[in-house]
Image (tube, rainbow, N blue to C red; front, top):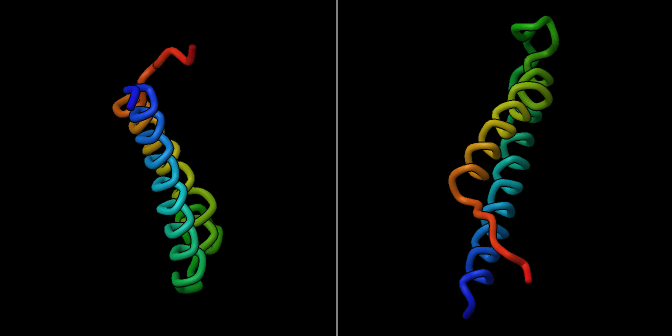
Amino acid sequence: MDTRYKQANKEAKLSLLLTIIYFAAWVITAYTVKNQTGFLGFPLWFELSCIFVPLGFILLCFVIVKKQFKNIPLE
């Protein structure tokens, strides 16, 4: 198998894994956190699921793309 296909397959699997982890983190923080006031004055479940989890995953995706993804010719 061509190395380009291996790299593309690896990147697709990483992307799917990140999506599943993000969804799980969002569901956990949205539905299991108690109804308390958070750091910013919003409900804690909202702050975690809609502010902090997305920011954390933006950073995580940035790191994964920099470390694991490679530029490959598509020709």
